[in-house]
Structure formats: C-alpha cells, structure tokens
Length: 311
Length: 249
Ligand SMILES: Cc1cc2nc3c(=O)[nH]c(=O)nc-3n(C[C@H](O)[C@H](O)[C@H](O)COP(=O)(O)OP(=O)(O)OC[C@H]3O[C@@H](n4cnc5c(N)ncnc54)[C@H](O)[C@@H]3O)c2cc1C
Image (cartoon, rainbow over all chains, first blue to last red; front, side, top):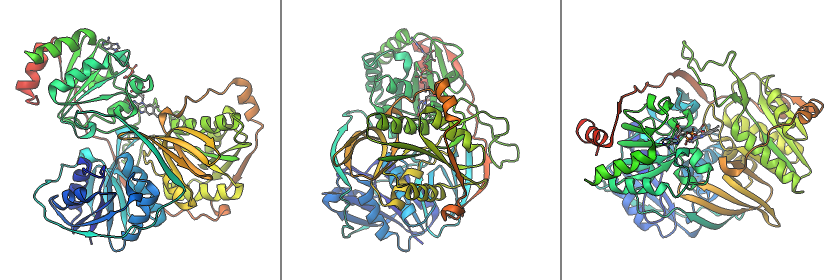
C-alpha cells in the first residue's frame, strides 16, 4: 500500500508543511507519492521529486489549479485515490478544506490534525484545544487525514530522486470563480515554520506598536504572530493568529508579549521548545507554561530586550 | 431564500476540560454546555442576511441527544424562525452529521447552509466541507464576509496567507470564521418568544440516514503537562538564559 501526499504550494515553492507531511507519510510504511496540482508548477514538481522518501511525483499542471480551489483539487484527488491506503495533506487552510471534501466524496470519515501515528490505521489527534489527546482507529479502506505539521520533522528536501509523471486535469467547477487574493507581504520567515516567533496580544494596544515586535523579530530572524484579541481588534491581519482556531506553531523560541495565555491561544503554541512571556500581570496564566517569565510592562521590556540584543 | 444553520451543543469555551480517569473521553457530567461559538457566528450571519431582505426564513438544525433542543432554542432566541431536532444518543461523526444535514436541507429546500468552521470540542473542521461535497454545491470555507448578489454570493475567506475573495453560485454551503461578525445576545423578550417557536423532532432513520461510525475511539489521554519555568527580572538576564542555558538564540 502506498501513501499519497497532496502538496501545498504557491505554484513556485512547495510549503514546509508538505515536508512535515511527507515525514508523517513515511511513518506509515510503504511508498510515498506526492500529487502536485497547480498552474505552471513544474518547479514545485521538481522540488517534490527531491524530497527524501518520495518515490513518485504526480503533476497536474492546469490553469484551473492555480488558486487551489477546493472543488477542482478535490476532483483531481478523487481520480487518483485508486489503490492508495492513505491520503494526507498538511493541516493548513488548504488541507483542512480539501481532505474532508474528498473524504465525503469517497464516503470516508476523515481524520483531522493527526499529531502521532500509532499504526497504519490508528492515529492520535488533539481535541478540546489540545486539552486532550484522542487515539482513533479507522475502519475505512482508505484513510484520509490532515497532519499537524509541527508534530513531525521536516523531510530532507534535497536527497530524493523521484520520477515526475504528468497527469491529466480532472475537470473544473464553474460554481466557484476566483476573484482576488489579498496576501500579507513579508520578508520574514513563514509563521508556522519559523524558528523564532514573536507574538503580541491585546496588551500591544494598537497596530503601530507591533512595529516594536517586528523589529525584535527581524533582529532574531523570526516571524510575528498574534493572539485572537489582537487580530479581532484589527492590530494585525488574520493570518497572524496563533491558536486553536488559527495557526499552530512550535518554534525553538516563542515570545508571548502582552498575551494572557487563554487556553485557545496555548493550543497553538504550547509545543514550542522555549516559551518566553512578558506580561505586567504576575497572575497571567501564560506564566504557568513559560520557561522564562518577565513580569514587566511590555513598553519597558521590549525596548530593553531590543537594546540588549543589539549589544 | 431559506437558510439552514446547523448548530452543536458543546462544553462552554470557558470551561477547563478534564480527561476522565478511565480514559474513555472527557468529563461532561455537570459541566456547563453552550452553543459552539462558531455556530453562534453562523446563526448571526443567517439572521443578518434575513434582516437585509435576502432570506424569508432561518431554520436551525441540531443532531444529538434530547438536550440539543436547548441549543436549538438558543438559536431561536437569537431570532431564527424554527428548529429541527434530529434526535439520537449515538456518537456522531462529521460524515454522518453531514448526511443528516443534507437530508434536512433537501427536505426543507434550503438555498444556503451556514455552518461554523469547526466545533471547539472535537476540533474536526470537517462538516461544512463534507456537506458541500455531498450536496454538490459550492463551498465557501472560513468566510469573514458574505454578500448576496445576482450571481450568488461574494465571499471573503480567511486563509493561511491572508484573505481570498471568491464568487460562488447559489445554492451554496459556507462555513463561518471568527471575524465574520459578532453574535448578538438574545434579549429576554426574544428568549420568551423562542419558547413558542416550533421545533420538529425526528430520528436519523426518519431522514433515511444510517448512523455508522468509521472511527473507534481507542482512548483519550491527558496531554503532557508543561512545567512553569523561572522568572527573570531584566533583559540582560533573559538574553543570557536564552543564549547560554536554553541555547536557542
Ligand atoms: C471559539 C474561540 C476560538 C478562539 N480561538 C483563539 C485562537 O485561535 N487564538 C487565540 O489567541 N485566542 C483564541 N480565542 C480567544 C481567547 O479565548 C482569548 O480571548 C484571547 O487569546 C485573548 O487574547 P490576549 O491574550 O491578547 O488578550 P487578553 O486576554 O486581554 O490579555 C492581554 C494581556 O496583556 C497583558 N498586558 C496588558 N497591557 C500590558 C502591558 N503594558 N505590558 C505587559 N502586559 C500587558 C495583560 O496583563 C493580559 O494578560 C478563541 C476564543 C473562542 C471562544
């Protein structure tokens, strides 16, 4: 039995989450194949061919896959499911929309956000904002799942040598018209795969003050994240949100600045290697999970930290 | 247009959930329950579409045990017109729930189904996508904006890289993200009025849906606990610890 991984990409670059997903796929045993659905995506296919552990790349290069419309990618995946024992995608907004859609078309009960693999039919996944870990065994002939990317290492992106096979487009929906994308532009590393994340919460007071955190992140080579409260208040865009219903991150260092540490926020960052919290409320729950807590006004602490790093 | 809003009864978001000692699930006895927050957002959006003159009726549906009727009542108190309660004590997986919702939507002739993007208990984030696939209707997942227009709906989606605008045809299935709206509180007069609104009760079998689970819950464990570390009193100490103790910068 082989595993089919659905690549996530922007038509030029395969996402780091795809590399984590390949690692998860390799743990199942059997061959790992990757499906690339994109437009002018030959570069992505060759990057996928170099991922360690991948033995075959299927590439469907067509205009209809340019914007990852769920319906179109799902139609393609459905034609490829065939004899695969498992279909996997990263638990990003792309994968989370796609996998259940394909699963329902195939009458399969999908498994969301797996964080561990017990055997080829048994998986662990966080539930209740990570307050519990559920182990489930699937009776479906094909297992379809999304993968919590922070729970698996990145597969080596250079040592593989798989063949690339071009496959046909599988029909496009006329129900859904792409209009526009309004993407956050940043030179910083991508939030979910950054080694260092500097996050701000409601305590930041406004969007302008996030400039302090950006400076700190740039100094450390990190990404900037936020709590839901900071996003809801309009300080930063939605794609900064870390948490149960935002992004899950597990960097080497997570700095939580002016963030109280609500369970929904912790759900997205508590697997970070080192957690640093800066908060002027000594009772803030974030201190209960942080390795280094600093009970200080952030408007004093952040500039001081910046100055110390610049020394 | 008729709008269907599926809702789920879950442990209140402010409750600290505990794993049962026998590892079969989480403690639910005597725990405060509430409508899943994303479902509240879905109800609110349906009501706004109705108030803007785009819909004649908002129907709330919930599948679950007797108490799920309370959650339907919450939706009615917010302003929805009537409820459908698909009663069962069985554990329901998203695929089955999607089949139930499809059957109700088909029966009622709904043009739009608005769901929450995920429920905060199982954190599955599946039902809306499955429903769209089963109904063969366009999917608008994770929306932060929806506008009715001549060609269906103009939606904005919250995606990992930012925002995406799509035009989808009608009838459709959409799932609500956090920024879609801020749900209203039910006023006391509306809570009273909701008591008189009809809730139709039926079983999954009445809808021709068989409850057949594909997943067996082997066990539910407590996650490894994270220990609190040390407090620092200044930038120099913090940077020193990060550099020399943790060796992460
Ligand atoms: C369905 C649902 C889903 C959710 N999903 C998410 C999610 O994905 N991610 C998420 O983050 N939240 C989520 N939440 C919200 C969560 O419950 C909290 O409301 C949110 O995380 C709080 O954000 P915060 O810590 O920034 O704000 P607050 O809780 O208001 O905390 C602000 C903190 O800043 C500190 N502070 C203020 N001023 C200063 C200062 N000058 N110096 C230092 N410290 C200061 C305060 O002491 C306080 O601890 C969700 C909630 C629900 C119901």
